[in-house]
Length: 181
Length: 138
Length: 92
Image (cartoon, chains in turn yellow, blue, cyan):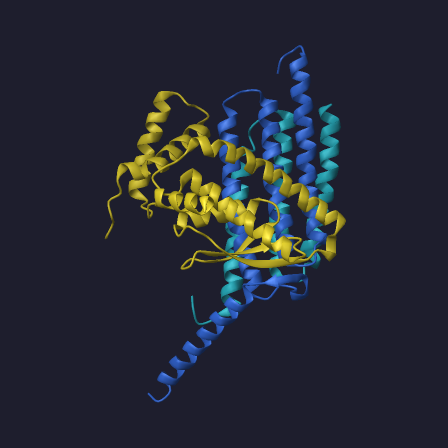
């Protein structure tokens, strides 16, 4: 089999996550248990080989924590918005499918943006064009051109936030340039 | 778990009670959305978003009621699984729904995917025709 | 207090489950039904959570995780199958 060797550094986030899941499932974070979990994580990662996730090589925890809090707030807002729309507008709600071109071309970034979009108010990814990294977003309660512009801005903002957290340096530089210009 | 209820206990109980009721309301919201929205796509919004918040609130109330720190990682893992899987299944259902024309066009203000899909379908049809013609004479 | 909460949530979840079942019954298409049964699964998960919180145990947790994963695999499989069958019968 033709497998590319993965460096341990690239694999580290996966291993840490697996060990965390192991500890959480045993509900036991004693060193011995974690060590055994790490052993199993390495064996699993070697045995059940998956294509490595191409991480951007940087992760900004300073940006990630506020983003997580804002994200949680948006999830709450999304749920109440859906509840409100279901009660107030019901069958009369109008929607739109909007194409949004993303800045980044990495699969991880497109996937993460899609996930975030699916959970924030009023948007849901219908289709992804991987070659041009375009997301086709279904917007709930979109009535005018203004709403479409808002939706598009929301998508771009979500992507920008994710690039600031874990995008590559090039993407970050491009983003800075765009914001500055 | 403590024999004598303290003030902190009462507050924690109250918070988790509120969480439970709101979490259950989220499920009800999803069901109302399913019943009231006109087409598959908007029903998908109703089915995905309240689920995530509802589960978060209910797991938080479980954590608060158990009053031990070691349950939080498990609850967190359970919630993360939910967060990772719900958008994927919603996307798959939505994609299938769009492709199979379960969409009320009159409810869409704009549709920027339609042209792309039509173009792709044309291309596919042309390729198929070409392939058929190649096969034809042989 | 917990008894009152239990009663309230039981009523709410029963109503929600009834709504989802109605959608399963009338839902014009297969995908509507899949979506509604996904919601029904989530409602059952919510009931398991409330049981754990009220009775202060963790016995249902693995059941909950398994439930959400089964729901995920189920809806993805059905969605994929529907899309393939309708659109391009000669391509896998």
